[in-house]
Image 1 (cartoon, helix red, strand yellow):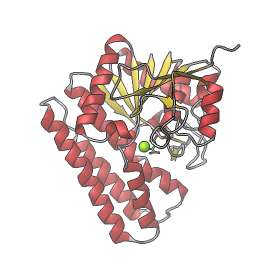
Image 2: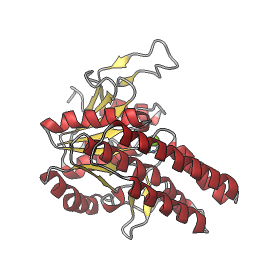
Image 3: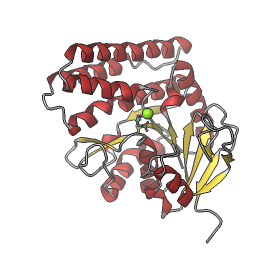
Length: 301
Ligand code: ASP
Ligand code: MG
């Protein structure tokens, strides 16, 4: 089984979402896959801005940004439906998610860390419904799954850590039956929930961590982190012309790079998989034929 995570830049519009659905469909022919999705490009930043406006009592700005975010998603949803005459319609669940989000930001009086995590989690809750719908329209059975029902965490809002035994139980209970029935889970990245059900996030870029957590508890064969670049480079190729593509790097090197601020992967993401020696690939969503970068224990013993 493989865990495949798609970042926000891979999910920026209807065309890209269908492209991602096609990549998933190809992989799913050969093996069981669980999909982890980030929010669409820029959406987490927009949700943070909405939170900040409400917190600062700039209600008018908050309402406007919320409306824009609503329209942005509904425009993409209409495109999703226009491109293919598939069976999926998700306008109801999308409306419901926006109604819940609006009620939460409007009536919640305490805009602390817990409210922050709750509000920003909507980016992934929304994007997972899109990807599942696009898959259904391509004839693939898929279902959005909220990670708060599976990943159990500490209560450190904004920087939560997984509680492995509880998460393993939930993953086996919720995800395995779906895989057995041939349903692809489209899992929300970035957040989990405390034992008493309060939403917690893992910090920015946390969907990588969601993917490696699932790989650990379900003993996946490998994790593929799909991005909009060919893999990992020795430096940022956008800023540095002499940046080299790295065909493989060790866990140790990847951890160092993440610590030094290179946007390789979320700083906690290697933790769940190092002991089990689960290989992580970083691949380009738009050039899936390329091998990408392999992150693994390395040749040295
Ligand atoms: N959407 C979240 C963020 O932008 C999580 C992620 O992308 O992994 O930080
Ligand atoms: Mg993101």
